[in-house]
Amino acid sequence: MKNILLASVLVLGGFGLTGCAVTSGQSSVGEYVDDATIATRVKARFAEDTGVSAIRVQVESLQGTVQLSGFAATQAEKDKAGAIARGVPNVKDVRNNIIVRSGN
Image: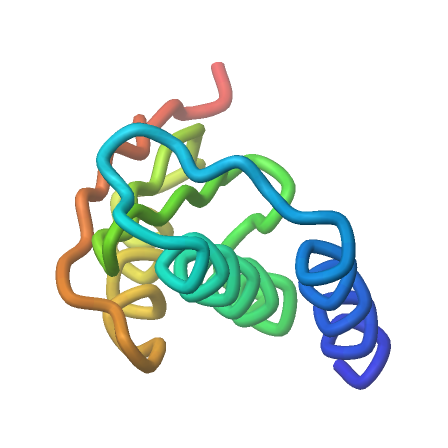
């Protein structure tokens, strides 16, 4: 966990030194950094939880709304991913677009 947080701080610190492009729909670099922090926290929590695959689930955040995409092995994994994302500080909404794909 410390390694993930350290990596996050270094990456986010690098944005401050080099600047970053603010994407359409975001009004400031501060919001961009906030969204990057939210997405990083969600991914870190997925990595800590054995019930959700941090590899198969992608996380994006825009103005506090988290969008989850990718694949889950079960409906329970999809639901748990959404619950984990909702529990992250500063998350305003979660759009859970994860597709449940059973292993045939």
